[in-house]
Amino acid sequence: MRLFIAIEFDEPTKTNITDVQRKLETFGRGRFTHQENLHLTLAFLGEVPPARVAAVRRAMDRTAVEPMTLVFDRTGRFRRDGGDIWWIGLAKNQKLSDLQQELTKHLLEEDFALEKRPFTPHITLARQVRLTTQPAQRDLLPEPFEAKVDGITLMLSERINGRLTYTPQYRKKRAD
Ligand code: 2AM
Image (cartoon, rainbow, N blue to C red; front, top):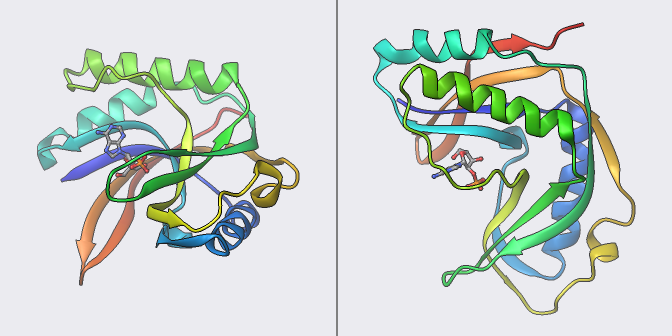
């Protein structure tokens, strides 16, 4: 099973993100993330045998999810030969960094091999993007918006009839 742990968003937040996608679309072409797939990845597990799902759940259960508010305040791109990846990013958030670090620690304690690359919180808006004009930040995101974090979700990633589909496997709610 291809698994990752992510923060899901409510519908108003997804609408705010798709508004940014629609603006980006006016500058060129790309493969845009479907609205239902928009999420923020905290940990990417890759291929995991089904028998290890219980260990992932234990790691999630040991991780305290404090109430927090995310602020989306920037857009950017990762340059790629086949077309760039465009993303929306977050203002620095200590609670989010702590959450990601605590989750990572508990996953390592359960013997999951995680990549050691630094955490760059972002939501992928589109891949293989080729733009005819470069937008200014204010063209895509005229003003920041916020989202509350409700919990963390273990997601299964698979292709169903050629469509990338994420299916929640387990949710750990935030502490109240
Ligand atoms: P991306 O959007 O930047 O590609 C499901 O694939 C989720 O896991 C996506 O959020 C994706 O981030 C992330 N992901 C995929 N491969 C990853 C990797 N090797 N390391 C970290 N995150 C990864």
